[in-house]
Length: 198
Image 1 (tube, rainbow, N blue to C red):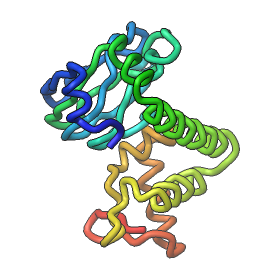
Image 2: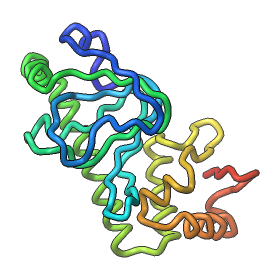
Image 3: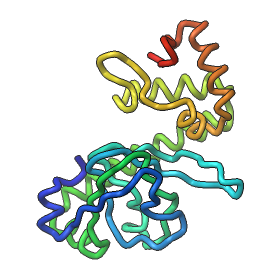
Image 4: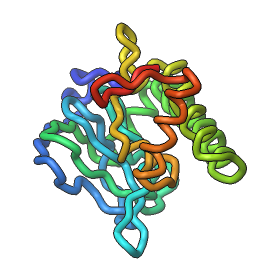
């Protein structure tokens, strides 16, 4: 959990329900709120001129998203769209900044989260620039397995769709399907009834 919900509520935050595929905010728009996901799933994407999404991050409950404008007063760097029926809690930007001033330990938490996200982007950019689809996907799955994200800890099932993996790696979904089969043939993953296991 980024910030305890009781703290957010005490500072005037409000819940907001969002429907599947509802846009929470658009890339390029001005950021007025701190957002934290309470339930559901939100994808944080950039969308090219052809309407193709590049998945920047899948937001899970307890995670924040869209925080860049809160620190640099710039516009949102990506759009946030609900993947499923979701509940977010949001706090006005000015109040959020005051909260950080009065609770500096939260600022360190945000610094760590932003550093982890930047480190992930460096890794992903390196994969996109220099490596084969097989290497890209294997590195992505290995990263998520190490971080305990999007891969079930008990059964090792990958909890991302092939489309989401394609959107994260800049590949076509057909390429992801072929590459997953190749990884299975090499023993790097197991595919059972369409489900992928690491």
